[in-house]
Image (cartoon, rainbow, N blue to C red; front, side, top):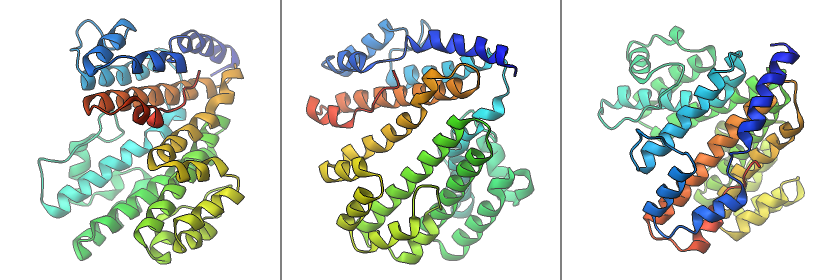
Length: 323
C-alpha cells in the first residue's frame, strides 16, 4: 500500500479508537453488580448487535468477528496480520495431533478463522501430509506426532508445538518491515519464556526440559533464566529484577493474577507508540491487538461476576487499556 492508502486506513482506525474502552469505561463495567447488568452495559455500548443473544460467548464472539470485518473493509495486504493468528493456528495443530494420536474425539476444540480449518488439520495429521502445512509447522507436527505415539507424553508434545509457535512468531517479527510486528513478536516470546521459567521453578522441572521449552529471544538470556528457575521462584524474581523486568518481579511477588496481568500489559506497552504513527500498517496491527486485549479484559470481568468474586479480586486481574 502507498502512504496515501495507509493514511486513509489509519484515519479510519483513529476514528474507531475513540470507541475503544478506556480505564474509566472498564470501571463503569465493573460497577455493574452481576453478569446480566454487565451484558446490558455492553449492549448499550454497541457490543454484539440486534441479532446477537444477550449472552457472553455470543457477544464476545461477535466482537472478534467485527475486528476482522473492519480490517477486511480496508482492502490491505493481510499478510502483516498473520503473526497475530499463529497462536490459534498452532493450537489447532496441537488439538489435531492429540485427537489423532490418542483416538479420543468429540472433545477437541478448534479455533475458527485460522489458516487451516480444524477438519483439514485433522486430515493432514491423520494422513501425515505434513507438506500441506505452513513450513513453520511441518517439523514440529512430525516430531509431536512421533513423540506422542512413542512415549504417550502429552506434556512433551505440548512443549514441541509451543516452542515452534514462539519460533514462528519471532521469525515473522524479525522479517517484518513493521516495527509493531517486531515489537509484538519480541514481547510475546519474552513473556512466554518468563511464564515457562516461573512454572518450571514451581514444579521443579529439569534444565533440559527448560532448554527444550524456551525459545531464544532478543533482550532475554534464556540460558540464565533457565538456571535461575532451577534455583526456585525467588531466583527467577531476582533475575527479572536485575535484567530489565522489574515490574514482572514485583507482580510475581504480589500474586499469580498480578503476574498474568503484567504479561498482557507488556504487549500493550510494546504497541502503544503506534498511536503516533500515520503512514504504515502499524496502527492497524495495534488496533487489532488492542481490541483483542479489550475483549479479553471484558471476558475476565464477566467470568469473575459469574463466579461472585469481590471487586478487589477482579481489579487485580484487569488488563491495561490501549487508550
